[in-house]
Image 1: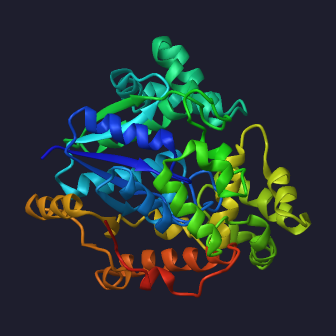
Image 2: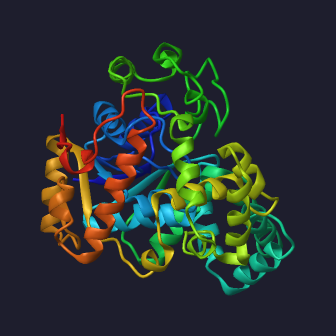
Length: 398
């Protein structure tokens, strides 16, 4: 059985995601494993719809096994997000291929850029560019332009760049997983729909309040799922509903507390964040007060969300991925888990967060963070759920 892995957020799952899964199968995959970011996302914002809804959507549209990326990775930088996804897939021991979308459609070029970015001379040029006050993506592009101009275009494209982060971790782990990319078509990252393709970016779809507006751009089964959730008050998430809670938590934090938040300690950024928190009366004001040319909005939002959830970089940087949590599967997915067991899967695997939390101290800490993130995220729904959902939600079976 040839097994392919996909790292995603699916917020929400749309026609472009279905296209990638179909193309992955066309390339020879017998099973597709999706590693899914949770209720707080890599862009730094709370998810638009529940990870359980997104997991079910993926299973309805071609995925066989959906695994959860723990919140410290899901809410991390591109490198941290890639680390979490690749470590989960690699730990299974049975995944053959990593499939990801890209603008270039050139897996060899993206892998070459990943190898370049690990070189000492690239790192030196990258740091030199950062010292000029430019953003991290611009610094990567400038460093590549000096050392390998033919690869600099990778750094200019968001999905190519994320693909390179995946490839970087494949190299670091000396993984047997081979990269394979599906060339994106239709709307690009953050763009509106391209009507002929029926594909719109997830960013664009999150701007809608009614499921009917999304209908042309998602598989029909997903539309039915989202429409039902909408009727039941389970979407959409509204950041405005939790805004007072976020600001309250941050206002209770000391300056030194912000130094412990991931992405916040370097260059004394925590001083700037602390001062901004004391002045801002809305989240938008807070974001704009922190943001500079050097600090991208996504990083600013990750810092705010990380502070809200109580993420502690001093603990997380010394912790390894403690477990693999299963959100949903079908019969083929069950066969993949059996294959993982036979291949010597290196981590505890279960659909029960309660069971996983008992496997180690690190696992207990990660499970606590996951439950906290779920409980706080629920407050942004039209009809918030009760605390403890992360421990009680059952495995999704299809």
